Image (cartoon, rainbow, N blue to C red; front, top):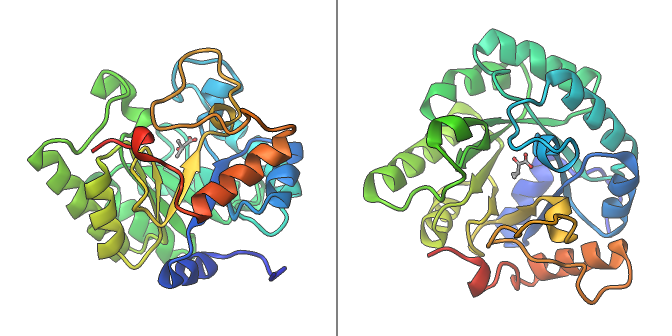
Length: 267
Ligand code: KIV
């Protein structure tokens, strides 16, 4: 097993070989060590921390300062995993703001890739960031930072026009220089088609088993949320003796293409 740090090139090579990529969200150094020990290749400091750590109803209140703080915590425990960090709400309102925010996430937080939500309106920002040497993970489908505009956390890409827009934006993001793409809550057939069209790795959440990798919110897959878990998630803690075992079971299930299963997939 290689001990070399995982880069965007490593993930692209995994995609080319058909090896699935295991990703989880992570917000602190202790969990980061645990995830690294279980073989998680990509850790995402998601702004979902606003909901699972801070108790907000949405990710909107999360600040850049908080993202820098949690990124720095995770970066100390991440081992060889690639560290992707979310640009929070409105950090990409202009390309200049996005460049400044990415600079802080990378220089103070240790981010290796920054993730931003949105399609066509974000293309110029993706181009500008990549020109400056900032690797970008695009995020399409359900955009949690836009929850107040959408009116709820709903599956996307179910009708012809919205599926076509997601397909088109995915290709445009790759052409603009994005190194990774997260697809959230879209039909499995659409996600799988996009994954085979693109050369960059596509990481799915609620997007079926045809993506190149999977990501879940750590607290959901550990069964730590008191409410009803998302339909596409699984409680990997069930039947396991430790958090490390639960995370290792998740990594195995992703690699073996057993997760997500048919009941965790939207068609
Ligand atoms: O913030 C987050 O955790 C995310 C994942 C749901 C992909 O963006």
